[in-house]
Amino acid sequence: MKKPFLPKRQAGITAVEIIVGLAVLALVLLYAVPKVNSMYESKQEESLISDISMLVAGAKKMRGIRSSYSGVSCNTIVSEKYASMPFTSCTGANPQGGDYTVSASGSTVTITATGLEANFCSRVENAIAPSSTTAACSGGTLTTTFRG
Image (cartoon, rainbow, N blue to C red; front, side):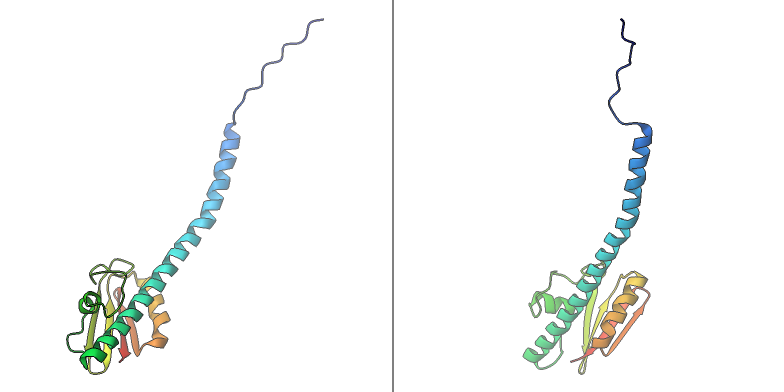
């Protein structure tokens, strides 16, 4: 007796399997990408707050050595190692690529961070406000004042 002819089964994946796989991948990415962005922005906020705190500490250290805030600037604090900063110039140094400036008058130190995205700036302002004398964000520029 002759066996009926059966075609060989083809190996590989079908278009339906590819579509289902891509749909699952898209769902995973829809969930993961916002989480990664949120973690990245949170790290940037922490970094900016840390930089500001170190610049204030550096200005206070400089004042302690010099007995006044005379000559205080961001670049002086960084170049003369009054604070151990993760950058060597205050230009383009903040986590969003903007600049830092430091100024002082009387017994206050003012730190300005420029080039910040508006929502990011507002979140940092709210986070740093309790530890500063004043904190304000306007047009992507964060200005914080501390008593020295």
